[in-house]
Every structure is written in C-alpha cells, then in structure tokens.
Length: 275
Ligand SMILES: Nc1ncnc2c1ncn2[C@@H]1O[C@H](COP(=O)(O)OP(=O)(O)OP(=O)(O)O)[C@@H](O)[C@H]1O
Ligand SMILES: [Mg+2]
Image 1 (spheres, rainbow, N blue to C red):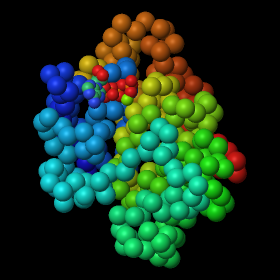
Image 2 (image 1 turned 120 degrees about the vertical axis):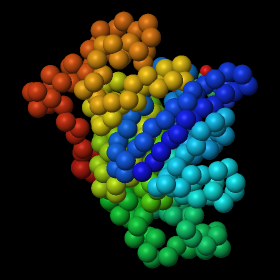
Image 3 (image 1 turned 90 degrees about the horizontal axis):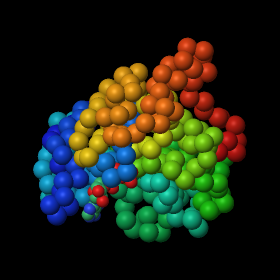
C-alpha cells in the first residue's frame, strides 16, 4: 500500500500542491487529470522526491520515508518513473536499456563493464515480454518507433520491481492509436506484476477508458477521487474550471454508452510492430 499523506509543495510563496492525500493499492491503475499548472507533475515529483515537499510524507507498506540518504535510496527503489520522452540510451540495445532498471540491485563494477547476471537478464526479458517486445531485445533503442521506445521505458520501470510506477504524460508525443496501445501495455503489465500506477494524462477519454480510479487536481487541490463512472459534467467542471466543451463534459456519458455497446474496452495489440 502506498500512502501519500498531506503532501504540499510551494515554490517560493506560490502553493503548487495543497495538502493532497491518497492511498493506492498494489496493482491499482490511477489516472490524474487536471489543467496545465494544476500540480500534476509536482505531485509525482514530490512522491519520488525529485522535488522536496514543503509538508507531508510518503509511506510505502507502513514505512515512512524521510529525506535522509538511506531513505531516499530505498524510496527510489520502490518508486519507478516513466518519462514522456522515454529517456532511453539510444546507442544501447533494448535489453541493456531494460537492465538499467536492475542497476540498483547490481554491483557497480559489473554494470560499468555491462556484465549482467543471468537472473537479471531473465527478469529483463520477461519485462520485455510483458510489453510484447522480447523479439526486439537485441535491437538498438534508436531503431525503434516512438511507441515501441515508450514500451521499453515501461519494461525498464517493471524491471526495477517497484511498488509503484509514476508516469508523467507517457503518451503526450504519440498518435492516438499508439497511445492506446502503450496505455494498454502499461495497464496489463502493472496488473500482471501487481504494481500500482499513478499516471498523469491530458486526454480525458483515455483517462476514463484506462483508469480504474480518477484523481482530479485543480489549483493544487484534490477536487475528485473516485471511479471513472463518477466523472459527471459537474466533476469535469470542478477539475477544469471554465471549460464548456460538450465533447469533454460528456466524455464519461459517451464512454458509458460505448461500453453498453461493448466497443470501449482497451485494445492491446500483441502483433509485432504494433506501436
Ligand atoms: N521549479 C518550479 N519553480 C517555480 N514554479 C514552479 C516550478 N515547477 C512548477 N511550478 C509551478 O507550479 C505549478 C504546477 O506546476 P506543474 O508542473 O506541477 O503543473 P502540471 O499540472 O504538471 O501542468 P502541465 O499539465 O502543464 O504539465 C505551475 O503554476 C508551475 O508554474
Ligand atoms: Mg506536468
């Protein structure tokens, strides 16, 4: 269980995050929605302490983490990050990029020589299987499409065997079809490994389709925490004050209708070269 207790962050005297608390179960897929500047990235960065929170704490399986070095190291093992731009090492193979996720558990000497124990190679290959890219293990990372590179980013996070994966707009630079494929793999692999996911998205349609739980942030405050089915027009207006686009306001209603017709389940493409 990941507990975020009363997290606040001010930049100077600007309060970007105000007293946010959440409990996230293992394997739960939580999507954070909110307008630009709502504090979504700040929340993720305070959880893995890329930003030092002004107040509050993160507790993983009952253990609170302080900002001393040892706690930070342990926290960063429990929390994996998936970036918008993948942050892969382009000239290395896909497999070696995934093995980077194992580095916290390996000897620095062996990793500097790029020598990886067989057991870790097995873990990395399994993580690549979870995103249907085992057949690309020996390819150079920069030979892959954007969607495939993001799936390698997911595999690298899985290889860390964290308690939670934080994804900050992981599909922001991908086309709609590829975005759905990538989100499908993020969800299926996190379920298989029982790892919680906290994912920032700008696309309300994807949020409602893939999220099991929606967290709405507005002006640094938590304004909604509940199932996608509860994202009514009022909730959308609370998250996005001033928004009056009926396409967005009625997104939950549309999804509900499509699900009624059996056409809105996330599609995961297992075919090679999918995304
Ligand atoms: N390092 C910083 N110094 C000062 N202000 C910052 C810093 N980082 C973020 N902010 C401010 O804090 C607020 C929240 O920023 P944050 O990046 O968390 O928003 P966001 O919800 O992720 O937005 P977006 O959807 O555009 O990525 C914004 O007003 C931003 O300008
Ligand atoms: Mg952001």
